[in-house]
Amino acid sequence: MHWDWAVAADVLPRLLAGLVVTVQATFVGAILAYALGLGLAVLKMSHSRLVSFTFYWLSEFIRRTPLLVQLYFLFYVLPDLGIFLSPFVAGVIGLGLHFATYTSEVFRAGIENVPKGQWEAARSLNYTTAQTWTRVILPQAIPPMIPPLANYLITMFKETPLLAAITVVELFNAANIYSNSFYKYLEPMTLVGALFLLVSIPSAYAAIWLERKYARQN
Amino acid sequence: MDIIIEFFPLLLKGAWLTVQLTVTSAVIALVISFVVGLARLSRHWWVRALATVYLEFFRGTSALVQMFFMFYVLPLLGLTLSPFLAGVIACGFNLGSYGSEVVRGAIQSVGKGQREAAHSLNYTTYQRYRYVLIPQAVPMMIPPFGNLLIELMKLTAVTSLITLSDLTFVAQIIRGQTAMTLEPFLIILVMYFAIASVLVGFTDWVASSIAKRRGLTSVKVN
Image (tube, helix red, strand yellow):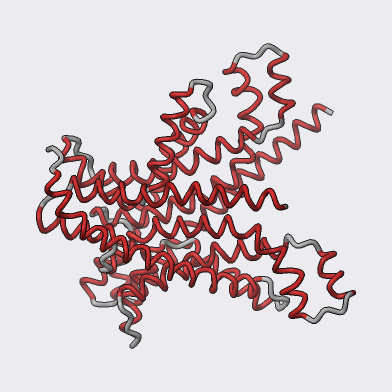
């Protein structure tokens, strides 16, 4: 078994088309994960015991069960309940929901790490609730959140091949379809690995740079 | 309901395989974590370089891709692995790369004075790590290792895609044979949650028993 450049050249355009879907799924999933995560963080910090308890355990349930099974759930169960989603939409919702439980911890920690004195200062200056959040709390809470949120973006990128299990033709599935139709496994799978490294290693170093940048400011 | 009872033995079998996969790959991941984590601290540049290549490769690519590579591509290169072996190696190697960062970080965070003390006692490198650095670093590793253990358990679900009949695979069998969707997936989600919760409890128990033992020794010393 040796490397065949003709096969590599043949499969590469399909892989690049798949990579576009992978990147789209990553970013849409991440936007969902950030938005839902922020909502979840606020609900988990609720003063109502019932609300915070319910959402804490809901979040733990999602966090302690595999993303693959959650994707199957969205893909197979929802149509039986009358909700029809395209594979891509189901996949992105699954990614977003799963990682919202991780990002919610980032948001919670970021908000809780703002010293209590800052809240008291805002109150003593007679700031409204909106002013307190936008002028005092968030400007201090957001910068430390950026590096971990960027890291979850990279993690989500590496989880997108699971979407292949619910028929989304992303990078990995594009290779798999090609492999199964032409019985060529070496080149497609190796190129998938190479493309993943090509994106994730520079992103990882960018995340480290972000970490240093925001560590300096504090 | 009758159908669920009929399939219950199969679900238990799947759960047992999921547990076996988790435990076996956790042992592999733990060994790799220490080997690669310590190699990253080596004074030889080529050892550090090899460890970094390992780390970037297994952390930089998707676990599913690694698993498919081991199961479908390695046989073409003359190395045939059983599905179980391919599964535990992929899971173990993948999580081992994350674990090695935990080991490295924990050892590096042991106070500088401890290193100097070991030097001034004329400890060899082995003695310094064995008696000074690692014992102090281990308690710090427990909480992140606990999180990685959950990630590992969840990753074993992916082995269903390389023909292993774990919990996820069993749910697919039930779906195929009965056309039920809600019941099998809901049941396995609850089973996964139960397994993960046991693992969380186990991590907490390890952390508290280490803390307790530390508490006792420090009382004795004083």
